[in-house]
Image (cartoon, rainbow, N blue to C red; front, top):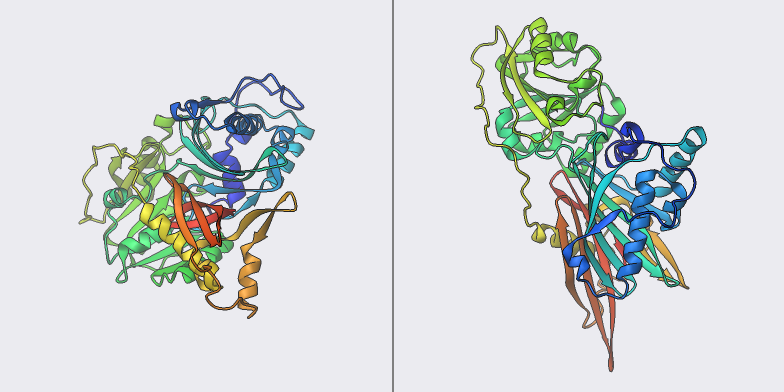
Length: 491
């Protein structure tokens, strides 16, 4: 099955309330002014003495109350009309989604039936305020019986104050639903080694593909297989932009991946097995493509441990063993080290000689790696493109559709960098080296990284006679497929 497009991912994962909440219905209409606060405040926020603290906290609390109750009026009261939402579960490519589309979905749902509410715990962990700019970090966890209960959802929100009112311009969200799926330790458990030819079933747009391709290296190859030709086209386009030369795509069928015979050292089905319509037939038709000693790896949600019930056919050990046996395979290893997934390693009963990875008895633990250097390098690349009208530099680090927000004539407006890049490509360029201005100094004054989400605020100082002009620019970034990308800029 292909990966869902970002809007679907945002609704199903970042907003699992839409499909899986089971709590009593919410009260229709606007949220009551007396509603209890949704967000708890971290000690650092409790101690914050900023005069804008109360107004910012109120804005964020109203946003998350509306977010959990799927109340479009409450959300509209604190969102800029053109606000954007970005994020997901580590896709290789990111899409910026207008909040207006989400609000329209909420309104349609309310016209049909009162949507369910969802309970969650949320903590405002950081707020950085620089004049009319503010950046807030919030960590939420949904509560049972909602699907994904306990999974951390990290939010980085960009706010702007205009007319004495704080408004949310952008939210970058990361759902740690499948943490560790492409971690080097996980690839070790799966038996992914340099030089291999790997067949990936259900590759979609390549959430796992690029990590596999990096591991197998130039001497190896990944054949990305899916029944969705459009998803594979997006994967190929991304591969071309990244210069990945060891990835091929292959459109398969629901009952047959159609890999060439005798070509695969390893086959992988990641977060797809529970979607397969004809798993036994597919496994049988996969068999001729496996070299002697090759293994099949299935990575799928561990329903028995997490309680997630988004499938009528959960991938339990009993089911895998039974269906594998009917297709001519045997289970060698079931690894439960990932927090929400199981890794099953199988081989053909007549395969023999398979290299069986050792069972990993150590639970996988997310590590907070300090990626300051990589994040600042991405921002430096943006400055290069900005200073020199260099489209290649901008495209290297900007997600398509990235906006630059600013205030003009008393209202918050934005420029789309897609248009800026098109301007540069058309030959309508500023003089080379027009920025930085003489004596201009740029300093990072706030830095925050939480997993795949980051925010950096830079102070820009420009000397001018007896007075130095000062302004702030905040960059929001998201890490997808080991690459930091800028998704929003507010100045």
